[in-house]
Image 1 (cartoon, one colour):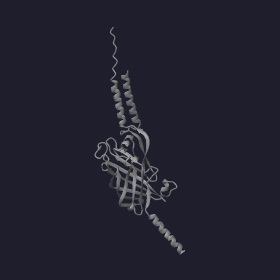
Image 2 (cartoon, helix red, strand yellow):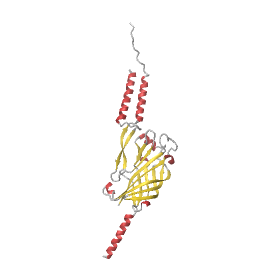
Image 3 (cartoon, chains in turn blue, green):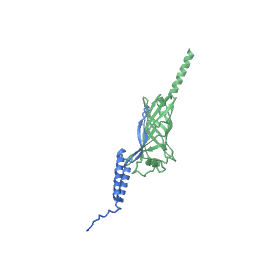
Length: 89
Length: 203
């Protein structure tokens, strides 16, 4: 039973991580905790960044999730398969 | 009558002198619009960021832009990037050491090739750029836009002029003692800098 639970957990972790990565914009760079929003001052014409606190998952986030799923998958092999009970009558 | 005319003439002359006099523009911007953008190439994604802790003054004479002089300061601690871990590394003593070197400055020495067209002047400005305690003389192309009587549009109930300065130049981090010869496979030696700032000269 723990063998199956670990594998399901690995799969859930992977699916959730990919989901978060896609939902936050499928960023192929590093993860970000704040995002610059471009604004322009009307009088001077100067363009500037205003930072907004927002999490954007990057490839490091996907990598960490993949590593976590791999560890869970590997851990699942530590549990023995239940032997199939056969009856010879 | 003749006496009055004489006084009017004197006043008119004084006014002309006052208009032609150099003006001092203050670049401290409470709106946080003034900014310096930096970019360093890196394998996965370029390190992009900006700083808005700008201050300093520039003396500018619309009638003689080649006499422009001043000093602009960027607070090192205001440099930020989107990744908080990258920002912590950037501020640390391993990179910029913002606690020990709180300011990045540029002070003009000479203005060459000044050309004015309308309210815009382009020039090559030579000045001393100081980063992490190391000063180097660099020359950069600068665009100055003089916006007469526009201060009131930015700051209500204030009269005065604005001066917008734009410039872009490259520096090498190795020239300023920022991990020279190290981590070049992770982040480039060349830093692209762009400055866009507006200063106010109230009347």
